[in-house]
Image (cartoon, rainbow, N blue to C red; front, side, top):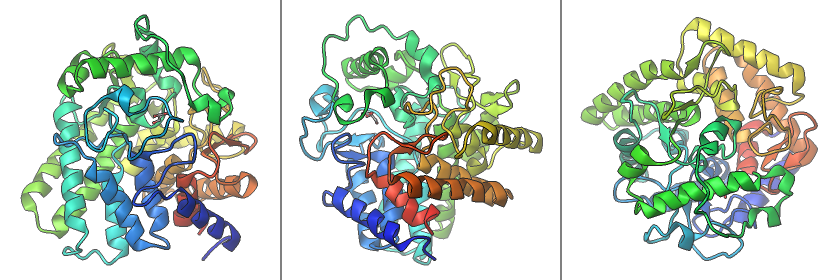
Amino acid sequence: MSRNPQLDEAARAILRRNDRGGYTVPTQGLYPFQWNWDSAFVALGFATFDRDRAWAELETLVDAQWDDGMIPHIVFHQNDDGYFPGPTVWATGKTPPTSGITQPPVLASVVRQLWQQEGADPAHPRLRPLFDACLKSHRWFHAFRDPLGNGLVLVTHNWETGRDNSSEWDEALARVDTSEVGPYQRRDTGHVDAAMRPQSHEYDRYVAILQFGRKAGWNHRTIAEQGPFRMLDVGMSMELLRANRDLLVIAEAIGDERVADELRDRIALSETGMDWLWNEEVGAWCSRDATTGQSSGLVTNASFLAFYARVGRAEQRARLIEALERMTRSATYLLPSLEPGSRAYDHRRYWRGPVWLVVSYMVAQGLAEQGHADWAARIREDSAKLIEVSGFYESFSPETGEGTGGAEFSWTAAMWLAWCGR
Ligand code: DGY
């Protein structure tokens, strides 16, 4: 049942307009290439009206998978001078050109959904190549990004988390040396209001981390061990655990017992390992610095992915629900990306307050599955209202509902079609 046929049509029009043939740009101008986790969510939107195009989005993404298994965060299918840092800055030497880092591993979870929507046939012709690509990517995470051997995900650039300038990264970023960065010209602030984007002292650090990777020849062993930014990200750790669970469902269906066993081991490891991110003081799972061991102590929308990943004891989950309750006192619309009142909270600035519907969607899905249908419904309702009030923005102020970041955003349109507009 559609909630608003006019908005359905507007959402489909955005996806068609942002479609560049086999891949979709997140938004015109600001993000003119293919982004990894954007594409996964976009596929859920296409799946509501063009099944073939939904699968194609994912297939184009995995065509750019590196030989070692990494699925890059950006695939530069064509040149566009309106974006920095472009392919010549990353200099990964790949064809097609890509960035040198990855992004949240939500692909397997989306593949499972598309496949189940079509009847979960183990012999589905488009399943196997994507299953293999996801498995290879998950193995890459386990081989290169699990320095503690406890199933959590190490990120070596804040852009990998997708929550680009969350204040979870502030202290780690403050230690990054920017003295060698040199001059460069940002492009993002030419597309959207600079007050919503990261600040220039932050951007210098993003560039410095990139330059470290480039100097290391994108050797991910070196980068993970010696890089200037090493965080155990609560978001990606939860997302990978969930993605392993979803991949396991497919492995069991296709009868690959060896892989199923491997995934079960990984899942068990991450379930226990997640405790390392638990912060008893704030009552939530929080990102933690792998170099200093320090917890961010910040409750972000990613903390609530615990329901989606199905982790935690009853008392831990109860505390998380308390945090959700707290958020409703200051936020008109759930789910803010950072708890209001936290240091650096800003209801309009990237990942320091605004609501991102893709994270809300995963959180709501987890809450619904874990017996919190009321909270899931509240998040979904607020998400729909944000679009009804402001349109298909990249993100929204949790206080005023104002759209923030890029307009006509593909994954917001996709979330309307696949989730909150239904
Ligand atoms: C950016 O903001 O340009 C980053 O690449 C996001 O992934």
